[in-house]
Image 1: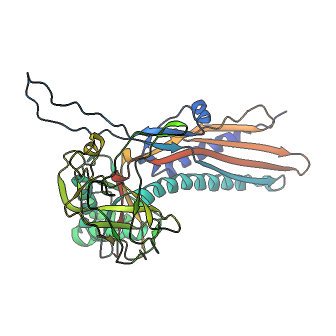
Image 2: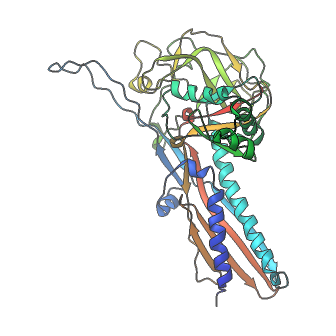
Image 3: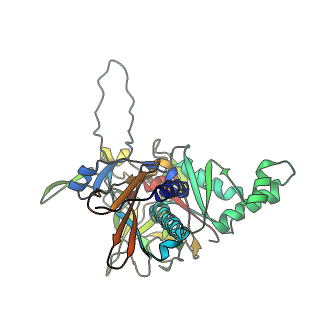
Length: 428
C-alpha cells in the first residue's frame, strides 16, 4: 500500500507553492513557451524557437512590375529542457515528532529551487546579452540606466516590457541618488527610496534588486588584438541561414554565434565584452547607423588557436551583391574597413554584472515529470502561473524508520536574441 500525505502536509504544500511562486521574481518577467512533453521526449528535450523576422522594403509604383521579390530567411534558436533540479532530504521517525522542522525543510527546498530558476534566467542574460553599457564610476545616477534605454532604442528593441536586475550595492546606489537629489517630504518616490531602498521604474525599466549577481573578471587579452573587417568575404560579412546541409541532410543553424579569427586569443576570457574599430551598430529595422560602436561578447575561446566564438555575428552586408538574408538581418555598418581593426575590451575592471532585457528576448520552457502515483510513493504536484511544475514525493523505509522526501522541477531557459538583452557594468 502506498504512503499518503496527511491533511497537514497537503496544506503545507499548498502554502509552499504559494511562496515558491512569489520567489520567482525573474521568471515572471520573461516570456513562457509551453511545450508538448511527448514531443520533447522524442526530440531529446530540444525545440527550435523562431526569432523575429526583419523585412526589407523597396520603392514601388502601382501599375509597374516589382523589380524583384526577395527571399525571407527564418532564424531559429535551440531551446532545451536542460535544468532538472532536485532537493532531497530525509527525516527519521524521531525527528518527525517535531513537525515544525519538516515545514522548515520544505521551505528551504522551495527557496533553493526558486533560486535555481532565477539564477538560470540571470545567467542567460548575463552570459549572452550583447548590449554592453560600461560606466566609469560607481552606480548612483539616472543617466546610467538611461544609457541602457538609449542603446536599446537606437538598435530598434521594442520600448515596452523592459526589465533590469541589479546587484544589491548597485541598486542601493541608485536609491541613494533618488534620496539625495529628489528628497522632499511627501515625495513618494524619494520616501520609498529612503525608507525601503526602493527604486521601481527608471528610464523605461522596471528594476529589481538581486541578492546575488554574477561577477565578470577584468579582460586580460591585452590591447593589441586585431580582426580583419576589410573586403566582401571577411568576417564582417556573416551570412545568416535557416539551415545547412550535412551528411545527415538539412539541419537548423543557430545564428546567434559566429567564429571569428583574431590576431591573438591569448588570455581572452568567456564573457569579455568588446568593440571593433570602425564597426558601428545600426537600427535593426531602418538599417541607419547609430554612430555608436557595436558591442560584442565572447561566448567561448577554442583552445590552441586564434579564434573566438562571439555574439552577435558581424553582419555588415558588404560587397556588391549582398544576400537577402544579409540585408534583412544587417546589424553593423563597417564605416572604416581594415585588415587590422582594433579590438577594445570594455570590461577593464572586475565588476558585478547587472542585466537588462526585453521580455521577448528571454524565454522559459516549463517541463513535466511523468511520476506514477501508484508505485508505493506518495506524490503531489502543482503548477505556478508561469507553468513551472513542482513535484513533491514521500517514501517510508520500514527498515530504517525514515521518510525520504524529494522536491523536483524541470525547466529550460533560452536567450532567443542576445541583441535584445545586455549588461550594465560599473567602475569601468
